[in-house]
Image 1 (cartoon, helix red, strand yellow):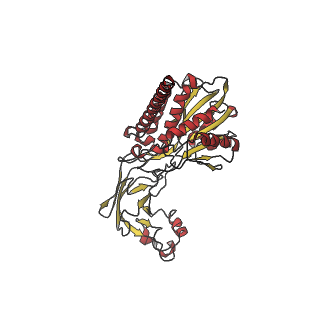
Image 2 (cartoon, one colour):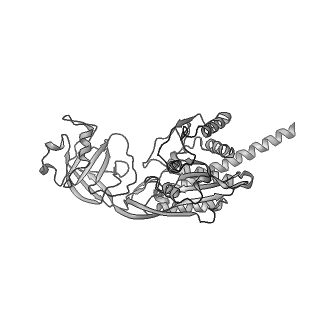
Image 3 (cartoon, rainbow, N blue to C red):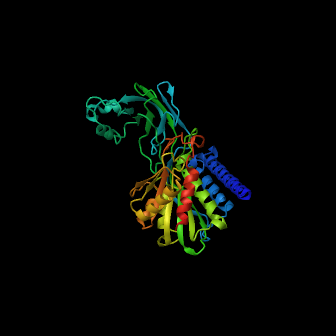
Length: 417
């Protein structure tokens, strides 16, 4: 009896030690991917290139091979609008903070100068050209006056070229994205709290650089299966994020999607160990260009490194950093048997509070695979922090509440094939 208790205690200590090591590795990955040296994993200062190199090194370190001797990198290019340096905005005498008080529309061009601001409180037809020429206009949909509707405001977003710029007032949250073209008129989005009620002048110095062909790479790894070597399970997550908006505003993307890449690398590390080898070969794909419109995954499905028809199942992971309220599975209604299997495993071991169902959606990199007939899920966790596509999605506040539990759920799910 004493010997059995001792063995159980040793087993518990060993398991607890392994879990602690996994937790440390996860934190290390997220801290690294969100560090200032990675520049938000975007298109300024080679942020995406630095991230791709790091992921490749982690593949090698963890015993994850090149994809069938094709190399780790699958290169492609796409157009992108970037903001490499100046990002200065002053309204009247107040200097605004990039990312905190305002963001630029992702397709904004360079602009510089001091301009009068016209507050839009009536329809376009009621303004003379002289009132608007060489001025910025301010649109505040939170204060509709003179029978203006939100539809009236939309007309102003495609207004005449003699207007020098547009300010849109945002009531609560600034949410940035990636632009793949460049407009002729700059647009700024400002928080309501940034003293936007009575702006007389705006002074701007914004540098934009449009890159017609930005070269980046999907990072692909491979773990050979035991018995079904020519058929594949696929794990995917995107590593790109929004990058930098000028010299000071960095969008770290801790939850979106350093957390998903960390899950990808943790699972790869686990299954690369001989004792955990799956029956099917495992392909790991860290996608670039997701934030720019699912570009990396689209390119992969058009130029696959293995036959898509030989993929048994694909699991795409994003926003893995919370889980207080469980997880959602996109495509759950498309592949009900697979969802029932995943849900049954969760009910048996109580990894997550619940798993919610969603139908088909073009909201992440699984989509192009689904369109090509590949059975696939897109999974993301719920609860906790609300930071998303902003400067506040940082490692320090990412709780990783159910990260280990979700990892165990995915391991069990993949082992069931």
